[in-house]
Length: 164
Image 1 (spheres, rainbow, N blue to C red):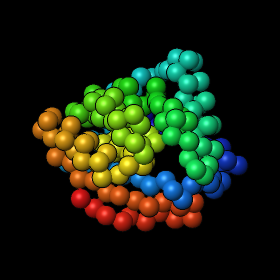
Image 2 (spheres, one colour):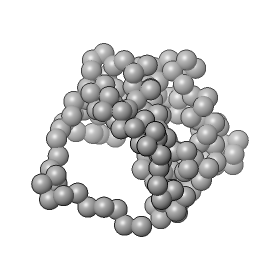
Image 3 (cartoon, rainbow, N blue to C red):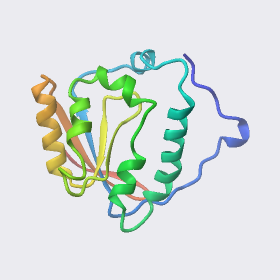
Image 4 (cartoon, one colour):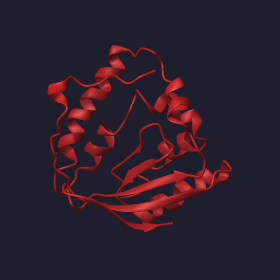
């Protein structure tokens, strides 16, 4: 399935704010998941309810990520997804447990977790090493080895700091 192309006049970008206190941890399971395979499990249509759910959160997230200090509850809720993750998480052993067990209540500093694109990279913001190591342990129980990378981000640039 080909992705739709944006109308010519929308082919520009707008820079959004990013709170300097938000960092990112990218968890990378050591297996390949092709974009084509990830898209195959996606339904051809979605319910209005699920589309509205995601669009509401996207609108909030673009602003919430620029607030300082960040609001953990707002960002965590805004990063929830009913379009991509529900159908794709079965392709990544351990992902459902990571999403359900690594929360702001269990991991202070966590702002949110999401499946990145077609996967299999998971992004988490806040509370870095403990989040990465706990997620790594969950994946390991599923027989999946995981590397992780720590990123310091800003509205102007992104730079990789540490790889594990």
